[in-house]
Image (cartoon, rainbow, N blue to C red; front, side, top):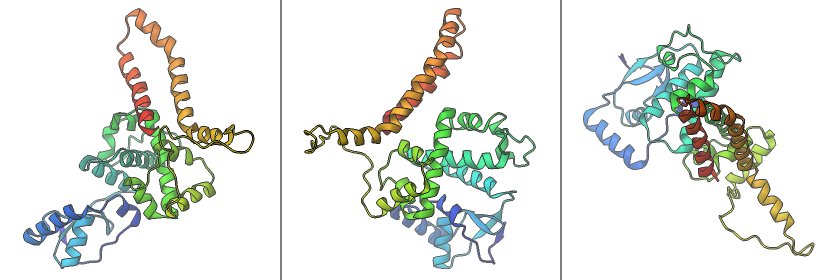
Length: 292
């Protein structure tokens, strides 16, 4: 641990994961540092700041000395996972922020351990080892206490937000802070959309023209063409609901496929594994309900 005598590097990808505090919390932190100094060291990786962004801003602004501690990692992915783990354990995150972090964790972990989707037991970093062996989705599902399907959906959401962030970092920030309303299922669906479609959505948001979801129970005006059938509006409404319908269909299909096996276990008295399976399906339905 040492006093900083060099210029600290700010990496924008990492900085985005170290969110700025709201005005009141930042003011209280600033008053504390002005009175007592910067007591906690900033954490660096090869000169790059990976923890303590708000403290660094305050110290630089008021010319207050601070200490640094260096951590060793073999790749950006390991740094990313370390930052995510810190943020998830420290902060009260909104559902979309938590989904974003889980998705980033999954994608970084996949890059680290390759396309085989197996855990690398020889990893020298102790903070990765508690996740245990098995597929990436399974390990992270156990780590975050959610289903494997949730982790995979979160990965798609994170991919879309990364693509939106490349177009407009401010729009990405507003989505994560709830300033722009868009359902998680819509973000997940956009992960497989053409780049042009994602860009169009981001530009609509930037222009304030994006409509995330029609109001509940809203009455659509009848189409004056074709006898007022309203077919065009019905088609648009159905199209906007398709991601949720597809997810519900998948949940029901998965449950139906497992039902016979569960029924046999229940009849044979071997029901110990049923509760976690049923809990996973309930979690999926509750998450879908929140998104609709």
